[in-house]
Image (cartoon, rainbow, N blue to C red):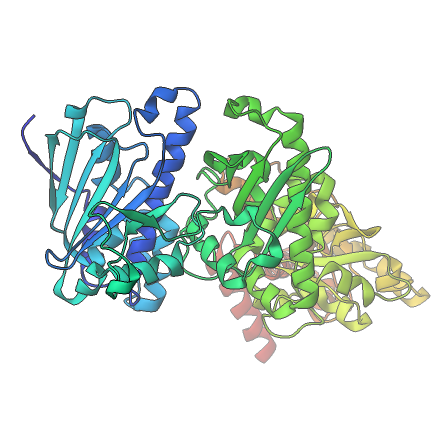
Length: 630
């Protein structure tokens, strides 16, 4: 087939433009990305060769080679891994087959440092070649295909690329970068060596480069033209003893595993021997990717079995609510020819999964206790995902709940620092429940009428403002033996509102006619009307039955297209409020009806809900104000 010219996807064109104009302030990153891709290709060959050893062809020794040519101003990264067919080259090099790319492009700010941190989140490392090159040539042949089934892919960073059939005797891929003038340093052997040692020393496949000529006659003879030497340790980092690994090595390995450009917050390296033998190296990232809340995106640990690469996204070993965790799992107890379906049903997988979940939760608990400022940053990035935990993992629900952080009436500003344990430590002796309020915003929560009696009694209330909060709490049930109660639902305990005295009882009894009048005026919009003990200053509030859906939960269900049961609220009225007193004085049905409607509308607004007829509410309010002034 002759050379064919094809166009990039629109998003790929935008990304190429970005790369060509030096998105990265640290240009040497390109070499790490291309070596990482080459290492992945070698790992994939190892895996496929388990079922078909003929894929090794005549060269079972796997490696990555780097050739730098100062005169030609080129650098070439060769690997003898799995390679690509023509179709795969078009798919992987001509498009960006990753979800969230549009969000990524929209999120770029023009700040080089910040933008550089985004690239790795979208698997676009290959395109980093255009940071230093004005032309990139890829020659590749998939293992198992004939020599004449190889292809050459060429791009000069424009809107198009060419692809043509060539002959290639060896399997694998060669990526040749024709360097820009301001990047010619990367054609220098010494510069390449130092960069590889800095970023890729941990990679478990030999990275070879031509031997350097001796500096003097005493050092020996000239090396052969094709004599290469490995310059990385080529030892999988996770197989080394923890005491032998420096923090910088852990951080660089994280960047290799995650394609991230920031250091992780923390990590845990653990070797387990006994009934099951496995090694895990787990990382907590410092920031969330754009597609974190997309539960359909493939995520998981890099899985190795007896140091043989199996898959990139082994999702079976961590639940979805921990999908932000990155790392490696290497086991000796899983069969090599296992399929994903068998893997999911393996008792060994269940045991390892349980242990890894415990380890991650322990890491987070330690972080929360020892470095609360760091944990606060983690919570800001990943708290929304962790809140999915109690519903997915009932076994660890209370442990997960212990990691939650909220604002409360005892905290200041918008800082989410109150844990359930903190709350319990501040509870009054007579208090046996954890009280919370769900609202659309922290401002709305702090000024809610429902807090009035709690503020008067000095009882703390957690302020829940995330759309997931109420759903999450419903799956927790209790914490440390203390039940949760939404302060907008059901009856409040006497430990909060106090026991009614005779005067209160008398007022309530004498207000029966007023309650009946209000209920009649509202014409079936409320289930009942009763005197309240929640309010001290406001005239009325809406209360729901203990197991009814709150307005926030109803909104979530409606947005998801789910049927919503009809739960009529209860209108609680403050019989000591002047507006209620005025209503009881009105003899005319029309006037009392107007006041009852006004009372109800105020309660609706206080609950954070929308009025059916806002203009009518304004009219009634203005009329009342006019009468007061008259």
